[in-house]
Image (cartoon, rainbow, N blue to C red):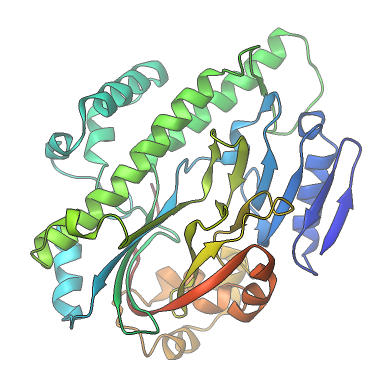
Length: 386
């Protein structure tokens, strides 16, 4: 563990080595007044991210910086145990590509609205009006995957059970909310003559009841993201496997969200997941090694949290410059995939930290129940976008 100290706070970092860029980003937080009077714990998958440090957690104080949660509000991983079965991965791959838009693409219609409850529809419509979003496109984006590290995966656990996993978030809906409220923060600081340059870490202040409009919008985006993952799973389970999604909700379902504010426990998590006492959770390693199914230990020292993944070893640019395509293909030879090419080189397993490093680090905060090894993986391999 590393402990860094700054002007306003300190942070415990639950890994023994971090890169200089990540160290600089964390120190920037610790020297910022909005990070005072809270407990900061950094997860072992930490690395520098746009606007924030991936793996960041803290207890919630009176200040809110939208850029800390970031633009993919509510992004997370949902895993469904499908029992024991054989799958024709070529047919599955063709089906998913036909039925589930990826990258910058959205659906051709808004029929998914019939799958939403009235309250969520009203909430989404209200947020669209307040943040000046294209409501039709927001609804058409439900049930779509996105790009980058987002994926659809089939894995097998150590007992031979098959799992379907979906990793995606709130698409452009959450992106626009984050940008809208970070701009609000900038304008409010100008209004109140706060002249110091906080470098995209301008903050909002909660009122005496702990409320702030961003929190309302963020919670709706989290619900939107969860529904997005569910709709993708529904298309696959009901359309391809011809089974009812409801059969896989409950003991056969685990969801871990990693870009959000836990309003029940007042904890901010960016690239980190909840790992409360006896709480089921999933941690994604990479597209070869799969996913850890875990149970939380409820560690206060870890902010009742765990890493959301292995964490990047190389930035996307470094990965594309360093990793050879032939090595990427060789690494993925035991996983059925149609997306191993130059466009996904930055998602190669070698771009992420070694799984054994993460397994060793997380012993204090979770127990690993099983490893769900990848047997099929699909990511967007076209032009990147939300």
